[in-house]
Image (cartoon, rainbow, N blue to C red; front, side, top):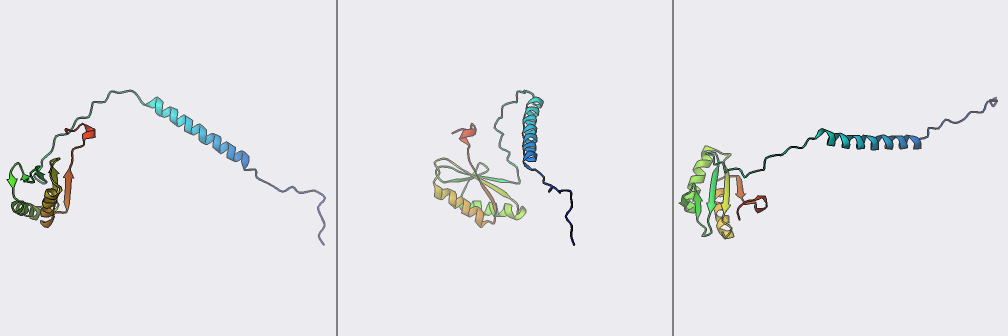
Length: 141
C-alpha cells in the first residue's frame, strides 16, 4: 500500500526565457565591442595608387594578336593560320602546359577570332584565354 507523503513536492522547472534574454544581451555586447575594437586598432595610412602592370611576355607562354583586318600576329610578326598552327603545335610538343593568350582589336570580326582559336585548339592546346582591355580600371579605349 502506497501512502502519500505529508510534504508536497514541487515539480522542478527550468525557465529558459531569462536564459534566452541573457544570451541575446551577451551576443549584442560582444558584437558592439568587436566593432569598436576594429575601429580602434586600424590606423589611417595613405596607400600608393595602383598602376597598371606591364605585360610580362615569358617564353613559356604564347601571345597571339589579331588585328581588325583578321591577320594573326605572333611575336610582332604577321603569320598565316597554317604557319600559326605549325608554330603552336611545335611549342605545344615542348611544353604540354603551354598557355596561349589571344587578343583582338576592337573592330576584329568574330570569325577571325574563331579561326585563330580553332587553329590553337587543333594544335592540342587546352589553356587558351582571351585578353581584354578593362576600361573601368583605367585602360586605354
